[in-house]
Image (cartoon, rainbow, N blue to C red; front, top):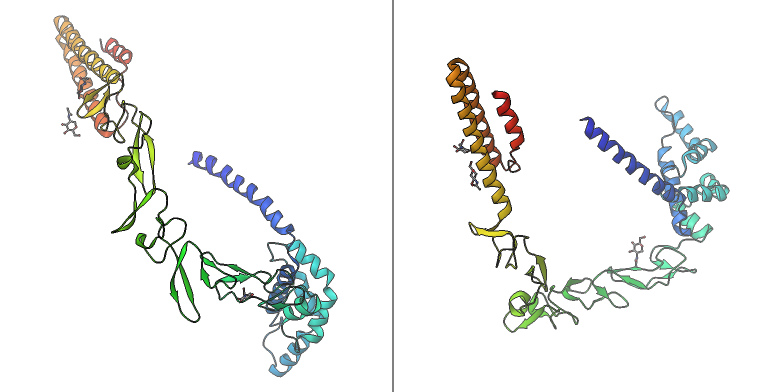
Length: 374
Ligand SMILES: *[C@@H]1O[C@H](CO)[C@@H](O)[C@H](O)[C@H]1NC(C)=O
Ligand SMILES: *[C@@H]1O[C@H](CO)[C@@H](O)[C@H](O)[C@H]1NC(C)=O
Ligand SMILES: *[C@@H]1O[C@H](CO)[C@@H](O)[C@H](O)[C@H]1NC(C)=O
């Protein structure tokens, strides 16, 4: 538990520490002119919404209504809105504050005198007074109409005094009005108002396709070949081209290409992954049960087996020797030896099957144990 805390806490601190400069950066970001004005107007509209009901509720209805009317354009409400203006803005907060300071009198003028005749603050302030934005679907210094992008792209400068009014087509679409499909897409649907472009099959190369599936490709991509029946099919480089991987590697085919992966280290050349896919066993390994196995680890195993049984034998001999002098002690020692052998055999079996690391018997420890038991 403590370990977890020790581990998690620094991570959180690091995450916060990494996040903090980002927040500061967002706060001081300078926004494009129209965007900045839009952000300010959005924040002011939030303030209007927040103070819509005023502070009072209940009481004489007629009197309350009269009071609300007075409050609607009041200095008090304006100050309330100003107090929290831009505070919820994340990106460009500093810019928002700056702009609201610069144009406070303009905004106040709208608030007190123009709320009713010009209900859209954005249009009044950003488009007409400050001339930083344009109405929707227009662009540039004089707010000219945008190119028609057929809903498949965006007009550059849309709604601002910038840009060139040309279309930036969505992915897959092309043409001045975004009413064509680009090279790697085909028309999957078209009527008077709508065009749907769908990507060509992955097997199609340059030149695209005239429909769905690998049959419609005009040309196949590298790693694929044209089949008259099925269209572009993947070339199995490992079989067809006998692509040579290095001797200690094997070839794996994948769509459009192939890769070479390293053989298991028990192999001297292989046809696949694992010690059972060897062509030949590497030095120090020998084929056993269909796998190349480590000779030295087997030797160590049998050495461990021999010493283990010798140890058991020695313990039994010791019991017999003790038996000569004292039957009583011999019973106790014999019992202990029996329990010890049973327990260690059981433990060995358990570790061998449980997938725990291979038992490495410390013979020195065993010797110590025997010496103690005698
Ligand atoms: C321009 O922006 C408005 C929203 O601000 C959007 O509804 C309209 O589709 C856009 N027009 C183009 C051509 O990008
Ligand atoms: C060692 O003995 C275990 C059983 O106790 C056996 O499974 C293993 O194959 C033996 N190892 C060798 C190398 O003889
Ligand atoms: C070793 O474990 C298996 C299953 O866990 C069991 O069937 C087997 O009898 C055990 N052998 C010994 C010698 O305890």
